[in-house]
Image: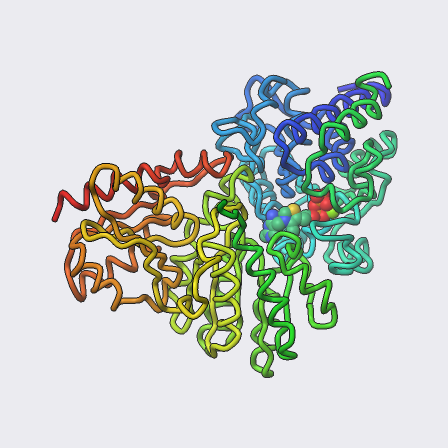
Length: 277
Length: 312
Ligand SMILES: Cc1ncc(C[n+]2csc(CCOP(=O)(O)OP(=O)(O)O)c2C)c(N)n1
Ligand SMILES: [Mg+2]
């Protein structure tokens, strides 16, 4: 549980390498949103999640719901780091019969608690997990990772309203605010205006952080867990960079759902400190 | 040399070709790059409405536009059109508003995105809606022509296109032979008739070639319109061949096979073998791997043809 900032950063770096390798090997998949979310997921798994990698179905485990399920390479890389799956399994990403399906799938991969792929569904599912925990007097929590484009789905707001109505203090959202969706920047596709104000007005506890600054991320997770914020649902709005860590992917909508070629792959491995220039 | 192309490209081209009609508007839900409406958006941003990732809203915006005299073409992935099914039912089909919905990346053929993206029920659900025309063309040429015809119809429609490339069939075809509601006979044989749609039309042609080597002569029909179904043609096929096979990258429940079976039981009986996804979900795999895994590729179509023949 007590990992230093430097250790977390190194863990996230290793995950970034795996993310790029997975997408390059498959020549398909979603690197941008995997790289933007990975510092957040790393800190969450390595310092907060109450889980037993050897017993993935332990009933009292915290749930992590990757609602933006296309960003699966990010999740698979941390599941491998935590020991839910083998690093070798990462090679099965998008391969017929492989446990690492294109979108995270609870039927296929240990440690995955939600079958994603259709945006706007994970928050409702997380609410169900939170209600179940309450009914069972369990102190387990449900953490949900949302995309910013995903927030445009109306169902997100049905869930947001319902979770606040039911004062689900055990429901915690992290929003990957990377400002890009599939076709383009969110600003071009669908402006969302004051995002923190929207969640506040829906009755949520809200905090904004830099989603690539490990110390700020830890503070943000403290906020989600703080006793005074367990009166209702809470959201961490993490400002991130889509494609973070690979220069040509950063802030580039083209790498939402495209794989690097061999040359670009090599460059990414250099930039991520995996091979020497 | 056969040319390969994806049907979604035919859709994108048709929207551009239709742009001269000022009433044509395009609606997007953050998948324009994928469904290929992006070309229209680039050329006519003023007539393109971005709805963000919000399919339900998109369809009813389309209904409002149609009620105001516009001709809206809305697209997303086939699977996500299903999220707006009730909007399509109550907001579009019921008042019979001509909103044209295109679902790209249909079927298991869509590949490594996996089961969440592989719609195997879209044709079935939209076929249940009164007033709605349901199309699933087989190549980019016919997709383009059929999409352009939709702009002239006064009825709502659902058209499934595919993500991945398949052989182009109609480069040399007289365009007037490609009409909504009319199946197209691609091969003529008297032993068995294979009725297919979408990506399985070219698989059916391969199956017919395999059968020919064994002395079995198959008719192959591209039934790009599932609704209204070309009943006249089915009747003719029964009379000519006496045994039928349907082939679709879709659940065997509710799609083309069901449509043909419904027609047969009420009109004219003949043995029918239905090739389709056997009521199961897909998984991540390459397009060709998926067709084999689902047992819907050419060899399975050929086997089904022999079974149908033996039941004559
Ligand atoms: C309901 C639904 N509509 C459309 C899609 C197709 N799609 C996949 S990812 C994506 C963009 C997501 O953007 P965002 O939520 O911002 O994710 P991120 O930037 O973190 O990758 C879209 C439109 C989908 N998966 N689900
Ligand atoms: Mg985003």
